Image (tube, rainbow over all chains, first blue to last red):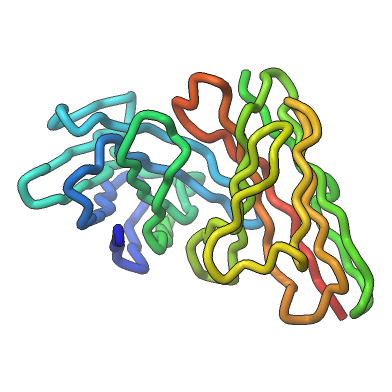
Length: 112
Length: 115
């Protein structure tokens, strides 16, 4: 089956850039997502990218996709303490949004 | 837009009781709703998928008689944990997608503690 892997933890200083990495195994992954989960809360969709794109930028967020290596990354520029959360990447083989496979989540800690 | 709410946000109950969790799409019609379970420091595990007016489809290993799901309307799905036990304590998250199914919108989650 599909497998999505993420590193468990990342610590950065406020103002630095954060890069959260994700690898996946399903070649048919069409849509790749990044979600943010703050403590005790549900998931907030941050951004997503289609598999025919290499990069997508949305304000402080930059998503890079290397389809050949099945590697996805989320870069957060000028990281703030409010960015501290767990970040999940997820993939879907179709655009129906109804078959999401989540990674284990990366806990981002931003130090002042 | 695309707001999903859950009620209650947290619940504590005694072992053996049943607990109902509601998931509502507030500003769109949710043709499909999903129920996830999340253990501490772990990822989300899909429990079941429900389409309005039909029976839920459960993931392998999830007991359908234990976790009753009802999706009676386009804006409401309920998850009932029957005869809850301490091992059912977890964070339950629902999500919903509209007829276009472009993405899932997540609720804020319900934390269940069974004593």
